[in-house]
Image 1 (spheres, rainbow, N blue to C red):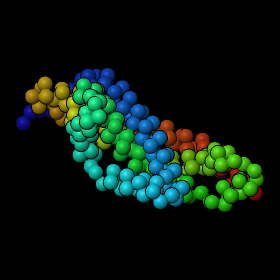
Image 2 (image 1 turned 90 degrees about the horizontal axis):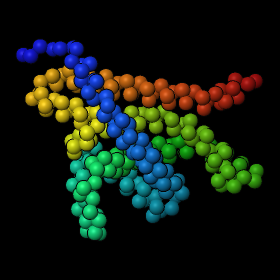
Image 3 (image 1 turned 120 degrees about the horizontal axis):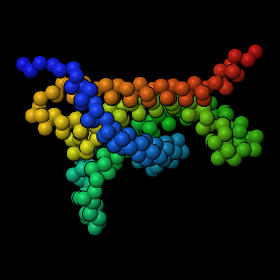
Image 4 (image 1 turned 60 degrees about the vertical axis):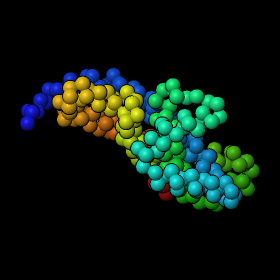
Length: 235
């Protein structure tokens, strides 16, 4: 058996870290698009209109039942064929487009449930009181409901973001050269040698990213709940 070389972990880190920006860029694009779709699904759910609510629930149920890698291949092979039927050719599009599309679909389904549960956790009487006080629907949502929804949703949003980061490592399966893809290329170039060192280097990167995400959102949650704690401690 080939001996383990710890020093090669640093070598793998130096060669894969330049591709970290691809992973981060894909994550940011996915979060933005997925969150917007999630908000639309949440709106359809809470408005209680039968058609819109049914479509949203079917979308969420079906999407959450499909494994990430299966949906990735469906989008990668199926989306070009579907658009080609309408005269749109995306066969030469960047693989990042298919990755962002896939994980935006998955992320939006999760966000729809996160946003819905956060909204429903707020006492409906607050909305009614704000409307009776003369605020419009938009002012009520923006000033009263949204700040509370944000605080409630943050822990689940953080968990979803960490899961997105980890599942995003599957992007290499369709050839996207992100940090995981670069690691796979390095292993292939070495004919499978030093695979353990390379994977350990990747594990360190993902571990550090997870800690950073959790720290950032924990700090944000602490900041947003500061006013609530002051009110709760008041006599």
